[in-house]
Amino acid sequence: MARVISGKELSARLKDEMKMQVASFPEKYGRVPHLVVILVGEDPGSVSYVTGKAKASEYVGIRNTTIRKPDTFTEAELLELIGELNADESVDGILVQLPLPKHIDEDKVIAAISKEKDVDGFHPLNVAALWQKQDCILPCTPKGIIKMLDSAGVDIKGKRAVVIGRSNIVGLPVAKMLLDRNATVTIAHSRTADLPSVTRNAEILVVAIGRPKFVTADMVSDGTVVIDVGVNRNPETGKLCGDVDYEAIEPKASVITPVPGGVGPMTICCLMENTIECFLRKMEKNPF
Ligand code: NAP
Image (cartoon, rainbow, N blue to C red; front, side, top):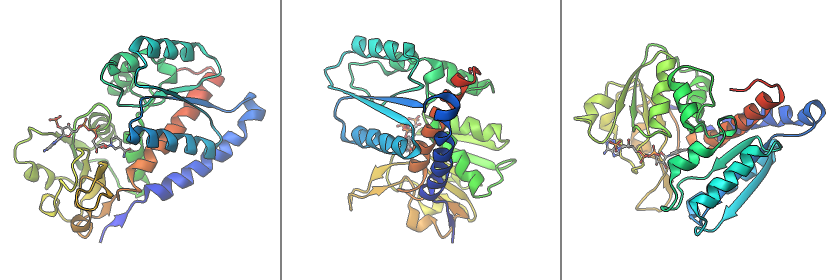
């Protein structure tokens, strides 16, 4: 039976620590950190993510401003809004909720956010800094995954890690962060030949695909550490589920993360941490 890493519990503990830290800021710095979240359109998934971010901010004591715009909002208007927020000294973090409506170029928008306020860690300069082992804002989901492994006492060094998925948001950065912790990393994707033979070789398996129950028990060796990043709806029950067949794999794994209550809460927790980091760097004149 696997040890289950509860992202819910770990993130609750970390948020309590941040809450205490933030409570000391008004006296020290004259104000609390300020996160601005922009949502364009009405996508229900995005609305719920943005609400979760506002709730977490409120809990930790971070000032949150959520700006909601209709999906008729143009790219030029969005870029102008970001420009204003970049120049606003009272704003420490800017997050544009993805995905954006099709008429808006996401890459252009991400690149427009000031690197110092890029709490998501998606700006090309932050990405480049991560790959060059320079000081940077780490992307929230991969950062949360590493924290979960550390909290479970998983020694990453020297392990064979397999990451399924090579997106800019999850797969690639988590692979790089595992590499930086001296794992030997294989990145698998939709063109990987004989995926089960690759995943069976993993001591740490990170799955970020977006397909319910894609990873089956025969793809995982006994004792593997399994991190499930996927967020899907089970087609039969309509309930949230991950990319791995949890019931079948949990008895084989040494450590596993559940969905929901695993990587998801850690992502929001790391967003809070990144906002505090951006704030402190500004206050202490120690830019990235
Ligand atoms: P994405 O951009 O769609 O990338 C999916 C990756 O999976 C791609 O690299 C793709 O390979 C690979 N893939 C697809 N089908 C495959 C197959 N049959 N075999 C092997 N690889 C396959 O998705 P993403 O943004 O990385 O997100 C992945 C999942 O994580 C989604 O469910 C998303 O909702 C979830 N997510 C969760 C959090 C969280 O906080 N919990 C945060 C972000 C994302 P190719 O590159 O070859 O196309």
